[in-house]
Amino acid sequence: MSIDVVTFGCRLNTYESEVIKREAGAAGVDNAVVVNTCAVTAEAVRQARQTIRRVKRERPDARVVVTGCAAQTEAQNFAAMPEVDRVLGNTDKFDRAAWQREDRLAVSDIMAETRMRAQTVDAIEGRTRAFVQVQNGCDHRCTFCIIPFGRGNSRSLAPDDVIAQARRLTGNGYREIVLTGVDITSYADSGLRLGALVKRLLRELPELARLRLSSIDSVEADRDLLDALADEPRLMPHLHLSLQAGDDLILKRMKRRHSRADAIRFCNDMRRLRPDVAFGADIIAGFPTETEEMFARSLDLVDECRLTQLHVFPFSPRPGTPAARMPQLDRGLIKDRARRLREKGDTALASHLQAQVGAQHCVLAESDRTGRTEQFVPVRLNAPVAPGAILDVRVAGHDGRQLLAA
Image (tube, rainbow, N blue to C red):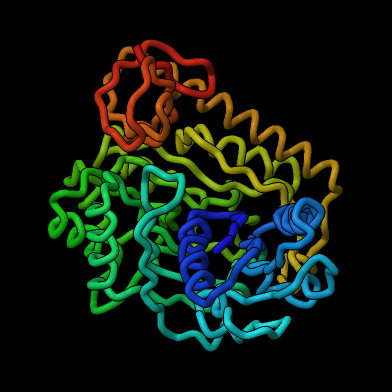
């Protein structure tokens, strides 16, 4: 069977692409390229459409199937592309029967999904760390975000299924597992929240060397999760925060549930609990009505929270969201603010790298020459090692983007 999957977007999509390959293969799909799309930004959708056209030029005989969040939210637009043979929604992409049908458009109502089904995988192709999806969807309606329309409301995977999937992956040789989802700090199933799930997973899988969390919403972090960060050395000291802005009025217009002070307080509290913790963050540049003074507060937040890695999103209006109806900023201004934020992030990263010179780190090798520290900082290794190995490394220097092993 020849099934290639092109994946856009988050770790969740990476995990789901493995399920797609399995289900499509079991359904007898052959000579197909599946484009698993992302809808977070207009740029992500544009790149998906560009990739679809390129794939069809390079493989004119292959069937092109489009799925993922953008396929769910913009199904008709993708179906109208002459290069596309089928469009499958976010529910249908896991349905073997849907893969066996020949209908051009199979997009079920994502809001009808009320339970999360376990989707087991044996490996994550090309990755030395494995992902386990513990949650899907989101109950919050941030004014800029289209993801609930592509993923539905929040639902969580049963703890037993989480443990079983993690055990399966560690049994297949993975030393590090990342818990992932759309809004994982909203995890709630069988009386457990995310912190209790983390504690149970680490307790029941002593063979798991490292556990990592994907992006979290700090305002939802429960007491058990904070305790686990403080007390569990196998839970990696790196948190990627969904901050989005540093100005309180913009946060309110985004319909976020935290304030600037909340974000700063959370980072300070976490450092008291786990002094070696590092923070990354998502920040949007150029949200509607953002003034230069408001933007400056986002720049300042990088220092106030001592962030080390930024994921910067130039604001792009998503159809159907409240922010798309707000007064928009000039695109050139948005791009300039995104550039300035990225430069701020580069400076913060370089400062963090410099502070690590001479330190010892436990590094998971991602390839024969590269790896990541506990804080998810990239490291250039000084000799080839087997991908997936965990080794102690002394830092000799850095090049502004990564650490250099002695």
